[in-house]
Length: 233
View 1 (cartoon, rainbow, N blue to C red):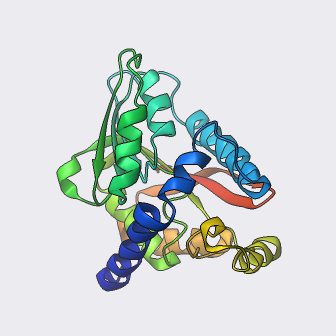
View 2: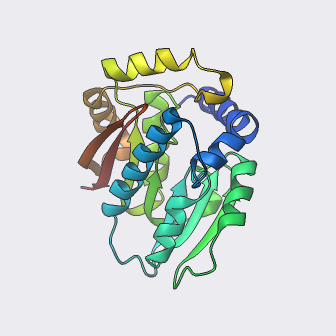
């Protein structure tokens, strides 16, 4: 991974979600009324969140889980209710503050520690599972694989994440999206074909002990993303 390219893109993502889109993201991840475009994004994200959670053990009691790119914390809360000790990281401090404000008191045996920072920081410790939902889609594919390798070095169970599949519909949607008012735009994504991503994963030495398993593509209106599960071989 080019540390310069990773840090540069990370900085742009932080600026976007911490300033430009903080209010829009807060509404999107709530029950507030949103535009038709964002209604489809909300529905797609809800479906993807449930998909990734379904790939994790139903009982997460005593397990440490990293929510890498937690946003306002919806997935982190659901994992905690299964008993997980969740470390939820996001680059945008504003989103972390929203997540803390929304954190319910009835988490049962689980817990959530929301932190603004870098998902690759080794200070976060070791994990049983890692989830990265729609947080790696803004990075170049070679950087994505290096990030996965960095996470794998601290994970004993599974890594479930999403990527932006390179498809004609997604390319069109992304182009059309640039015509919308700035408040309705999402940050740049980096589409990659599933075959190329699998090849990069297979060629990455830091993932030599890992293999792709379940995958699912979700396309709802202006939301398109594909989940992929990595497990130790």
